Length: 162
Image (cartoon, rainbow, N blue to C red; front, side):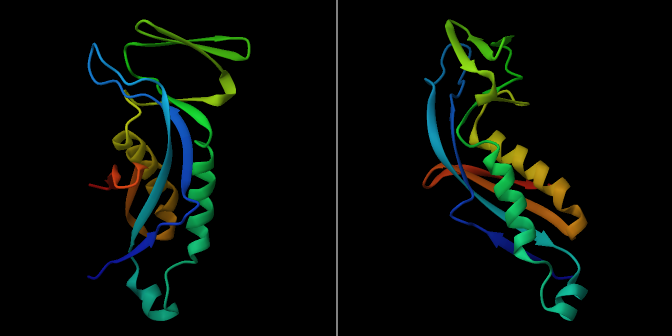
């Protein structure tokens, strides 16, 4: 059985966010930002649709969903909720963040706590791939591959399933 892969690499599949990586129990990056670029490959099943209509689905179905999802991470601070050295406390409309000897206070609505131990491109691509795979199942998508670049030529990708 043949499979077809749809490739989506739009200029507006991007988000700008601040983060820092935690390398080990002693070292971590300083808080900084990236202009992330995302590409999405969708392996589709249902060759009968391709033979009959000549296409699987209108690309706009996927593009709108992907863009809306990436906009949620645009112009925010991404922090790893599951790292044992990260401590969070809400104080009114602020979020106090303690990481080892560092202390930050952010507007709470400008921070997203991700269910990860590090805000690496590996983890960002995994989170997006899992979400897109679940969202696109009803469109006969068998496999989703999401690539996230933090700078041109430097990034990671995750494929779901396996």
